[in-house]
Length: 204
Image (cartoon, rainbow, N blue to C red; front, side, top):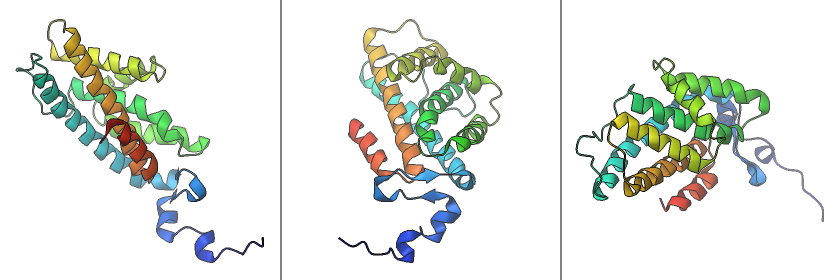
């Protein structure tokens, strides 16, 4: 069968995609993100990750309350710049960075890491960095990551040793945050297929 020569529209992506530095992954490939995209995608990702943290805390406290956990003294509103916020940011960075690298060339991975980390950490000092280093020890094992963060959240809240029901509910909420953070990253990178797959795991 003869192959026809592709038209100019088929051979080249739309100009706005070139400017953004994001190619839309024709023929089943993942969208590719390069340095030209960083000034646009990093602020969007930072904003969406912050929203994920706020929703996590509000939804998590509400769910724990419905489980009968002692949450009367816990505010469902995330205090930006707090230790809890830093722990959640450290978790998100650990959870999404390797995932995000799948969308870019090797030489762009560390520059992206530095730009996103700097934007997320903002004026946190070394707090977010310390939490991220702690979670890196989990080597990407989501169950271990969720266990570490759940322990940190409980310690920050300052409550006595929780029961099994409390631990299970909080651990499930943390796993949800991890999956949604990756789905958000895929969405910002233009990979709606992977976003849908991840959200289907949560029935979102």
